[in-house]
Image 1: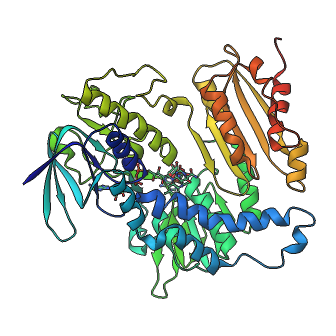
Image 2 (image 1 turned 135 degrees about the vertical axis):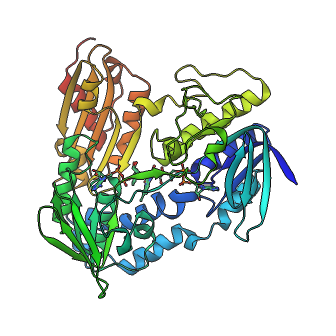
Image 3 (image 1 turned 120 degrees about the horizontal axis):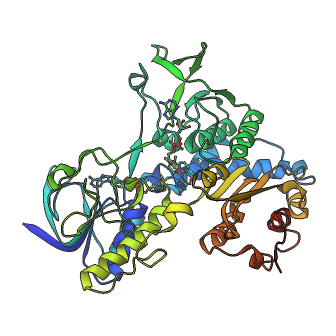
Length: 481
Ligand SMILES: Cc1cc2nc3c(=O)[nH]c(=O)nc-3n(C[C@H](O)[C@H](O)[C@H](O)COP(=O)(O)OP(=O)(O)OC[C@H]3O[C@@H](n4cnc5c(N)ncnc54)[C@H](O)[C@@H]3O)c2cc1C
Ligand SMILES: NC(=O)c1ccc[n+]([C@@H]2O[C@H](COP(=O)([O-])OP(=O)(O)OC[C@H]3O[C@@H](n4cnc5c(N)ncnc54)[C@H](O)[C@@H]3O)[C@@H](O)[C@H]2O)c1
């Protein structure tokens, strides 16, 4: 028997859940299909467990950086307690709480692996092998996320490497950990495991956090070294082998071998589209799904599939591999699916209700290292490449009174990138303790395209770290009244 729904969402990660919720709130009947845990990567193997692993170390270091508080810190981070707290954030990898939420939202949960069998049709195979046929009246949304990429390094796959899944869910702390990669996962997990007591060696073929402003990677590198992490930058693994003694030996191209109990591969992501039946609707498996700004999937001709029925949201469309950005896409997609189903007007002009315009130039991201890195919009280099005439203003955050009170010897840098023609900020980066809480002010300025002459009237409270805003404006100069 085939079950009919207005909308079928494949993948119940944070993004799929939000597409389903918006559409259900708009009055559509919705099925949400999930092969593993409802809540997806972010809840169980990514954002939440990784941040739980990082937080205790951040708090202890923060206390040690304040005279009067540091005297009260008499011990080290308790690794077992950190792992236990992390376990509580993942509910011990039990999704019953999220399943209850799905039911409460009026969404039908179908457990199993979904495969498209044609236009608006799919088969779901449950863990026991039983199948359910589903048919969508209006739309199907693919929110199947991404998986870790394993580079083609001889011996790596056979050495049973950790990916982000094992790094975020391990119940033990390996005495020695090798990390391959210089991106966000690599630096966050290097921070976490070095704090928990591992001897960490990080190998990256370029610098750290290469997509961000250069000072971000430099300050994070300094901090990692201070934590005792061995950095092998400009190097890469040539061969990996796990011996009979269980020890992983990683041979580097610049000579030298790293020995470790585990090796974490953090070299980016691949789309989870390999076993989805995409070929039945004219798309190519194992590729990221291209979408327009309303998240409609585009075919090889660059146009939406005939009938405008297939959407893709979250990691799988490769626009911004971040939970908050995927959920933003989900709100637009869920609402536009409702509008199209009901024949209501579609608001798809830039910054309209039914589009994810911010994905292009206003993506905020926090890297939860210590110091944290918070960024939004274009780097100075990206703005130049985009052909903008810009002025870049930098300021040492430690020089503002609020930062000095916050942390003894506060070290951090702030940068804004100003589009001189329009006199608006197109990019901002803050590196330093607790700068993540500054980021939304920059996001509002970038998305709102707030003219600098008006920003002078947004007065930061004294003495807070936000006073850096005033220094950045002074650095640019007050060009008009
Ligand atoms: C270590 C790590 C830390 C991160 N930290 C952050 C952070 O702090 N902040 C942040 O914003 N982002 C973070 N990210 C990125 C974030 O995790 C992803 O952007 C987010 O999880 C993407 O959500 P999604 O719903 O698109 O995909 P997912 O969360 O991957 O969900 C996809 C779901 O689809 C299911 N599925 C796949 N195929 C099928 C199928 N055929 N049938 C049925 N179900 C299927 C999967 O089982 C999964 O549950 C982190 C990533 C990693 C790896
Ligand atoms: N705090 C956060 O927001 C957060 C935290 C973790 C992950 N994420 C998201 O998850 C995604 C994945 O993170 P990631 O760190 O795996 O990817 P990434 O794209 O951030 O970094 C990949 C790194 O691997 C290196 N690399 C790639 N191929 C390699 C190879 N063959 N050999 C050696 N090095 C290689 C790259 O040079 C780069 O340094 C990111 O896009 C990020 O948005 C976000």
